[in-house]
Image (cartoon, rainbow, N blue to C red; front, side, top):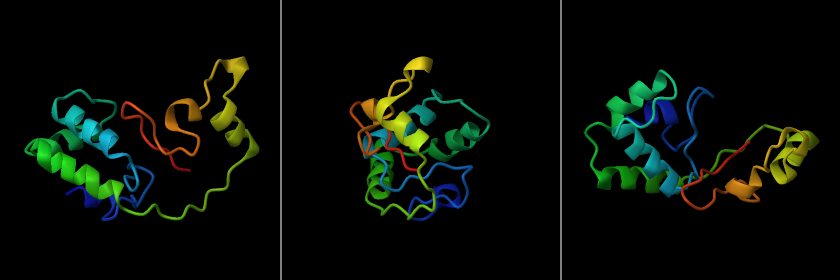
Length: 120
């Protein structure tokens, strides 16, 4: 069921769905638990996730999280702009934006406390 939106190897076929390849297992597992408990309602697609995880056991959620974490990240055609690099590494003091890397890691690999990995 996951593959229909997120892709068989965690590379979503469209930008409408999150890519899960190389995502930290802690983040994916926590997200699945949050959907199952009704704690995530950020947009209409969240209702689909509520249904998708309704009957999953904690072990099944952990297995799905581990599977997607082990999948290779697809090559991105995205080019990085100097402005994006500045925001990611240093933030923006004028707008009081903390650097993305302070939570998500220097390479976007994800951080502590189930902070998600970022790509692109």
